[in-house]
Length: 313
Image (cartoon, rainbow, N blue to C red):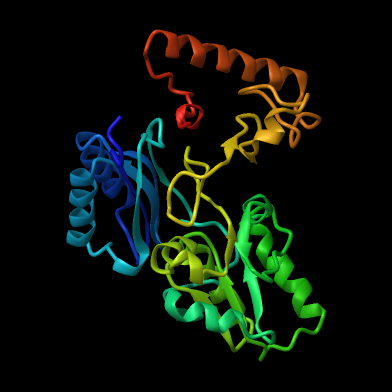
């Protein structure tokens, strides 16, 4: 198989949009014609997505975004992949392009200070700085920055409630906070919320972890582990190559080879994380889905429910 066959583009832009349905139709037609798959979220506050296709097709999509004033270089990041990490194209109209559920948030009006990857190490090396991982617990569990704290959130919507508890604890609102996430978009909203609540010294990693891994040499890096990504690569290493994790199709959590050796692991059905959380009916449905995936593979066909990460190694 030819290496680097696909380009994976992660992008977002906070910009006021009006005719969302028309934009969805245009994106659907263009991306389908270019054989690009992945997910695009469209809302009145902007767009957010991750897509994969041939290099020439992704470049054409970048030009389309530019023509619509939806392209921001600092928020458009690409990596390479030997397999197509998406089984289908999904374009959704949403209330928010990343859901936090708080009306105080408006990244177009107020956000924290962007810190380029080249200056990030110096900032988080200061012991007086709170290093805040705004991602979810399962993302944090496979990799993060040294000394980072994670708010024990399993969903980004839980961040405002965590922040309320932090306020009640009496955290100094002049304390320097350096936050980060995968591509930068969650920090846009998290920093906007903190700034709106009077926290003065809020910084966030420009372009997120993916930008840091691209720009900083591994020997100089303060990143430990791998970075979870929301596609069938599951995670990427410091070289932005497919990492060592697989995915449980029962709970969508990253799993290791050790997890797969567990008596609670059933391919396509469950893992130690979810074995006791899934009902018998759910497990039966997952088993039937996996059966259809396996049958399609034998016929050399792609099943719509296939998670191609199973074939990446």
